[in-house]
Image (cartoon, rainbow, N blue to C red; front, side, top):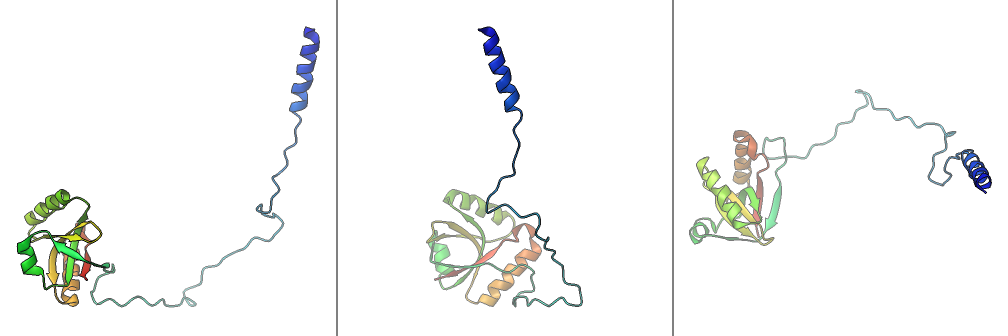
Length: 159
């Protein structure tokens, strides 16, 4: 009986090793006989000029702008800045305590930040506010040039 089991196991083992692998055939496999596509890069003579968007500020990076309804977290800040429409935002936080801590850091660096509460639920840390968009854009450019770590500063337009 042991011999029969041994012979059956040996036959199965030897027959299992003789499988032939076939490449998978599907509609998604590539045809190796098709010619290879070659792409070329245009030379300098044939290169066309791509128009860059016009910016009013001499800055490489475009200025991000968002329109939101905001409210002031402090009554004194509201009375000073209520008539302004353009706010230079240097930070945005989901928690008021984080915005206050960031405000304290900015005070040490010479800014006069205020905290706005956005309709989206975020607390926006603003360093300047303006009635004129050109002045606001100039301040963004100035901050980007003076403080490299605040290169992501952006404009909020109060609705």
